Image (tube, rainbow, N blue to C red):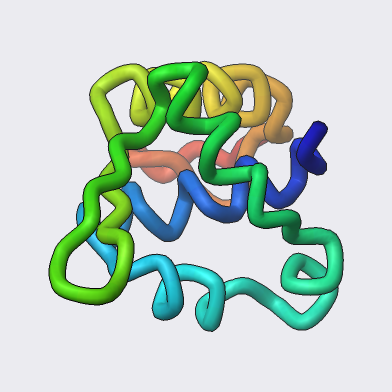
Length: 97
């Protein structure tokens, strides 16, 4: 089983870049994420339908799927709702709470 933090990091990188060679993707992970990374992680993500991996030349190319993007959006939604209101002036000059 893979680390959920690594799963999220992989999907976030792919959401930004769309397609990456596996080696580049792993290289973009933080040092801690690389320590937690296991080769089975990409296989598990592919099995879950969150990514697609195909061989191009001598390396696997990894791409995020629509389901992977939806999974990330689902994670972001609760975080966006839990952020406190801004303290600066609003669009009409009123102060936030």
